[in-house]
Image (tube, rainbow, N blue to C red; front, top):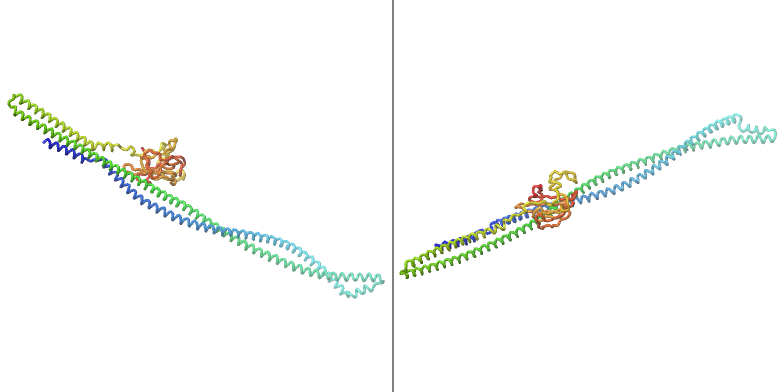
Length: 540
């Protein structure tokens, strides 16, 4: 019976050693890692979808930019054409103004001529008055002479005067006087005829001058009016062209603003695509790290299981050898007992004291055997305890060490200068824009050192609109994914896909991007980027 119990005990110890779960905590950790791998695979797939959306957004932006650029070129071409037309119009205006100036000068000259002609007309009118007076006086004189001649017989009277002379001297004197009278009459008649002819000429000249002056004045004034009309038309055309240019320039400015906005959208899409690529790389790195961790844990578990099985086999072999030795010892004791019984039968004649002595020795031997068996059972019990301890104790020692990096630390030793505020007035633009993080200032040179707030993988390094030099790190803490953002950096000391530990230096505080001074802008995004929360509730 004792042999059966011992064998059963040995078999139980062996069974316990083989079937006891090895690294039960490690098995759970492997499952956690597998879950993490599956989650990373899902997130990686989601990132691919986001990448496609970002690419589509970028392609759309590029298409709109190209269309906007073509429209800008068309508008610039129209502006150039209008500029040419405006230049020609301005040249025509200048020519018309020159013609108007020449016409004005011509009008001035004609005005001077008119004034001279007016003066001449005044002179002619005065001369005509004088001529008319002289003619009138001569007419009266001639009428008197003719009346006298008619009354006195004309030339016969002159003969009577001549021939009535008393001597030759008187004859000559009277002849001379008569000649003078006749010459005077003839002269009067000639002057009268000339004055009348001159009067007619002067009147004709006067009328002709008046007609010429009036005609020239009307023609010049009509020409001036036509030029002024053309000048007004050109000025109206210039105003129209100026208005068209103003409209086109306004349209061009709007197109340029729209182009800049679309350029920002394109840059944002490119940054988003770069960020997604970086996050995908980080996810791949985390996936490879998790897979490597899983492989290491499975390998370690296999090694631990093999060691446990080898230890169990060793213990079983020791138990088997101990059992064989115990059975041999029992056989030896049984043989000794048989020999002693034979000796007792042979020595029946010996004294009673000699018969009782072997019985006492046998009793002592049985007691000794019982004690040895008890000690053996205690040793087997100790082996059971040691095997059970060996199967579970090492797990506790390996996996019991908790991580001291389960939360976030402050990324800098500098003081907080601006809190998280969805309704903050932007210090540069002056309008309300959400402040999606915390700002830390610089009180000393050591504050410029920027450290990783938690273990993670660098998802992005580069320049972002408004943020300047930026570093983004992805973290997986207690099964929850986070992204931290560090902005306005002077420089950074890490690269995309690099694994960092909590407290590692990743950058230097700076003043890049939309910044009014040296500081760090820090954000925390649970579940990935574009989900900002107040970092104050997460920092230890």
